[in-house]
Amino acid sequence: MKLARTGERLGERCLLSITHAVKHKHLKQAPEMTRVVLYFPLLILISIGSISASLYNSSDAVIQLNATNFKSTVSNKTNVWIVEFYNTWCGHCVKFAPIWKEFAQDVKSWRNVISVAAIDCVEEINIPVCREYNIQSFPTIRFYKPLSAAGDFGSSGILNGNADVVTIRQAAIDYLDEILWPDFSFTKFFNFALLKDSILPSINDVVVIIENEHSYLGKEIIVDFYDYSNTIKVIRISDTNDIKSDFKPTKLPFVGLFTRDLKPRRVFDYLPLNHTSVVKAIKNILHLNPITTEMTEGSWAATDLTTSVGFAPDQVFMIDLEHAIHYTFFNELARHSIINGTKFQRLRAFVQVLARYFPGRLPVRNYLTKLSLWMERSTDFVHEEFEQFNNETQSINVYLPQTPDWATCRGSRQGLRGYPCSLWLLFHSLTVSAYMSHTVSDDFNPAHVPEVIANYVKYFFSCAECSKHFSTLSIRLQTDIREPKDTVLWFWSTHNKVNARLHGDITQDPVHPKIQFPPQRLCAACRLPSGQWNESKVLHFLIKWYTDINTTGVENTPFQSHQSMRLLDFKLVDEPVAIRVNERSSTWSFSTLDMSLCLTLYICSALILITVYFVIIVKRRMKRKRQKYFLPFV
Picture (tube, rainbow, N blue to C red):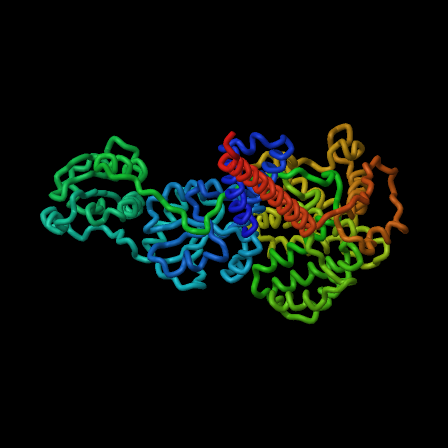
């Protein structure tokens, strides 16, 4: 974010300078190449300033929070805050985002009672906040009452990512009713004259709602006119109160606008009785100006970042597998302050599978082995202790690299593919590696690795809806996996079921649609003439696919996979399948630091050129002035 803001400021300054030059025709006189040199850095700076990955932007009514402003914005405030903790790559969060935006827009006039916000738990800077507030799955919605203390976990209520706008609005009203603010109670007066006498002299207009106790209409209108409570009074009357006859309702619920003496001005029996239409009509009659909502400091615009994929999509890259492991421990698990009990046992089993079957480079496998041994001696997983282990363990021969970007799993824009894609690749690689090991293992349990993976997804995959669906698919795992090849084929079949369910979904990357894998262009023999899968061919394909791992983009360190060692003794039973084999590239790769240094050097060079150019212009102008005023008369 600092880089983005710096880019914006530099871009603005460069733009002002160049605009001034154009206005005074200095730049127009410059050679074509000079103009290109001047403009190109400006475009880069503006682009840097616009990069941000988020499901929300400044045009939305959703207030965007981060680690620097979360507590100062939400805590000790006079209104209620409703905050969504989300994850940009979580498919369910992507689906839920339009609903959350619509809800925020729907209640933006309630800002003095309710503020709607969101925080992205994928951003590294925000992970400590999400861990402190014990966010275990996404999306998570929390209510924070007025004057809540810093660190207050808030109330989750009954909301989840399946709610629609009406359900969320009603849940918000229920929460306000629970904390008894504002006052939603029915009038206690059963006499019309006493009710009229109870209205304060400062009140100019009265809104009367007659409804049953389960209705939300009156409560919503009370919140709508909370900002006008000094001049407008909203009265709720129970449909069981005999006083209702004095207002002569033609139908229930009844909404009417009255003077302070309770003389009728308008009865809204011609409108669809929802709070939006009623409030709009009343404000039009009373000529009330709409109240604008200001975004709090810390909001920023999010621009879709379209990237050109620099890696061939039809390959498995080691950079994605290593990135999946790093993200798992330093992002997903980092949200848990402590993991113990059953969850710790499931996590330890997953780490043991990684240590035994990960088809990676030797230093990474050494790291996973040490991590597995460390967890065997522990009874829980404390994030601070893990960070200490990580710092003490990293060496030239033992490390878990922090890869700069995705390869095959890079989406066409931010928030697509990424971690979920890499996790699928990692899971497939583990099942293939486990299957390969059965030739040298007498006690091989074909369901063990899929079951360990299913438990990891159940307890630790932060997209709650995704985890729920996967758990449903794995209910019959023990009975469906009966022989070694099922280790690979069950996971392949499950992944295709997920792809079929999400095909055409809003979460799908349009450049990389979710298809049934493998497609015919990669394995023509994997389909029978009837269109059914030829599972023996599919098995051969998957073994080849997840053992031919491309190491482009990773450091040049010793690499030897579990599969490559076992392939020496492994023979395919059926005839070979036509496989598209990918050659490993030996091209140069650049880290994020390299690219940052190059970009910084380029910008500095361009700024120097700009400075030199304007110095020359100034000198020329000064020289002309001297010639004009000091030349002798002839």
